[in-house]
Length: 342
Image 1 (tube, rainbow, N blue to C red):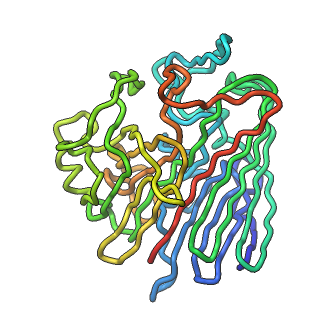
Image 2: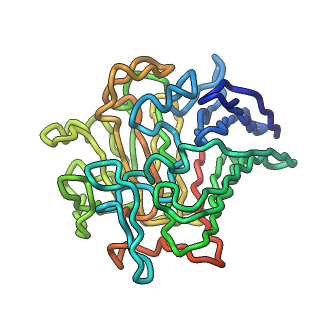
C-alpha cells in the first residue's frame, strides 16, 4: 500500500493537490483537493492503467460545464423544491440555482471549495482524509464541519466516508457525482447495468419528486437483472431526456450493501457501488456537449454513466423517503463503497 501527493495544477490562484492512493494489486485512486474531485479510479492492464472514470486534464475543465464530473456533492445532493426545507418546524431558505429550485447545494456546496488533506498508510489500507469548515449561511446552509475519509484496501474496494457536524438543525444527504466509463470508449452503450431495486421516483416537469413511485417492470427502467445500457437507452428515445436522469429507490443487499453494478463484459471489468441508503441517481450523460474537452475526447451523449448513491431526493418533504436530518450535538455518517473487479 502506498500514498503520494503532488501539486496537480492551479485553480483560482490556489495550488490544487492530487492525493494518490495505490494498493498492492495496482488499483489506484486520485482525489484532488479542489472540490474533492475523484480524478482517477484505475486498474492495471497490459498497456498501463485504465481509468474507470471520465477525467479532464485540468482542474478548471471540471468547472467549465454544468455536469459536476466526479465532484463531491453536499451538504445535500439532488434538487430541493423552491430552494427551501423544513426541519423541526423551522424553514431554511437556500439560494436557488435552477428554475427557482436548488440543485446539488448551489454555488457554495462541497464541490466548490479547497479541502485540507492528509494521507496515511498501513499494511492493509491507504487512506486520505479531507477536512473543511463551512461558514454559516454559505448558500443558505448553517455552519457545518465536514471530514471525508477515503480508504483503498487490497480487496480492491475504494470507500468514501462522510462525517458532518452542524451548529443548527439542518439536512445532510451528500453523494459523489462519479461518471463511469470502464474502457475509455466513446460510449457506454455496450456496458451492462444491474440495480438492486424495482421502482423509481415520479418527478414533475422540473425534475422535482412528487412523492409517488413508479414500478420499473416491463419498462426500459428495469435493471433488476443485468441489462445492456444501449438497449435500455434505445427504449428511452421517445422521452425528453432520450436516456436516463432518474432517481431509483434501491434496496442494499448482502453484507456489503450492494446497490448497483456497472460492468464491461468485453474486458470483465466492473464496479459495484455499496451504500446503506435508499436512493441512487442514474444519469447517462444524455446532454453532454462537444465543448467538453475530456481526455477520451469531446463530450457527446452516453460518454459515461453517473451513479450517485444517496438518500431519496428532497426527503424532508416526504416521511417515507427516510431521515436526512442533522442536529447540533450529533455526528452523522454516510458511506459509499466502490468495489472494483478486473
